[in-house]
Length: 295
Image (cartoon, rainbow, N blue to C red; front, side, top):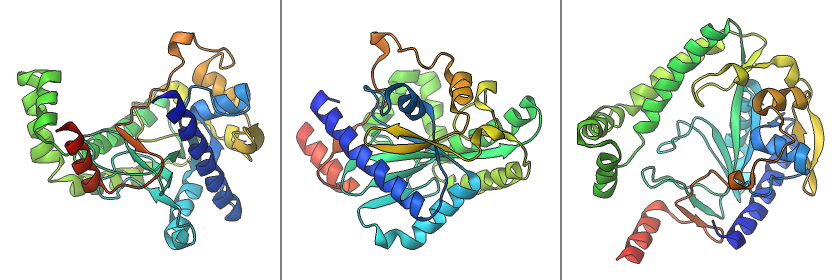
């Protein structure tokens, strides 16, 4: 992303975060800044200068309530949208609060449009040993990955890219598996994932985890009391909610989180296939537009 677009993107993102916070405050929904957003709040009193996303946790009760309230009240907020796993075509195990006046298409194999967004990760509190938690979580994650693969749309270019990436012997079976199993059976795969999640949520306890994001590691399981009543920290020209013991959380996740990374690592890791900060495109319209530009 060019510097000018990066700066403008961040401006829109910060306005989106303000709208998200306003909705949460109005309806008494608790969230916690997490990941690089939490580092930014402590180390920079705002966004990390080279970052271009905002991440928050919500415990499952607040997460479900947020989605439910938005579903019933969204007509009052015409400039914003909420997209969740289970929405047709959406492909990530988290929810996005996004600006409907903008367009973000992140990756060409997933033809799904949303706006400049805040990522909302569900945080669940469970019980058991690390191995028991990891076994449950990784089984669910594998099912979610199958569902996500089922949202891929192959065209000839993507088909060739997959074969080039993996080779014919490995690539062709992968493509056929995605096209012949994951895509046609994605709804039954989703139903299986919902059953697995329901079973996992029956193991209530005092260990926090984000199911479905990636393979479980011990430093990504947090004591529940770190996420008691949140504390507020300055963030740009407003304030955000942080885990009560944000120092313990960030230290466990990142070690010396106050230390700046080497300059060679100061860049955004988020790939975005297409961005328009001035309008919302429909996916078919945008595809035609990009095809015409290539021809």
